[in-house]
Amino acid sequence: MGIWRLHKFGSNLGHAVGSVLLDRVIAMAALAMLVVIMLPFAFDLIEDKLYLTRFGLFAGAVGMGLVVILYLDRLARALRRLLPARVIDAVSALGQNARTVLLNARVGFAVLGLAVTN
Image (tube, rainbow, N blue to C red):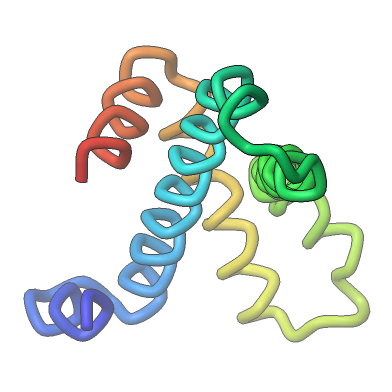
């Protein structure tokens, strides 16, 4: 739905897909951040330690996925021979946009704050 709206209001399709995908990644990172913050409090409330382990693994997997997304453009260049040029361009743009948004401290915290409250 968001991709269609962005495209309808003038954004090209690649930009629309990348923006919505980056929005979903940031929302997942915000959720993982909340899990990490609340995990120490959960030890007393949740008796089944398997659930706590799963929460920790979820947060770790999201963190590793975030690192991969931040370096997608470099990874895409390494896979240049295996993927079509359009895919390489789209993946590279996503990685560059992720770094632009998330590695700027002021913008990154604002975006994560919006994702947490949304």
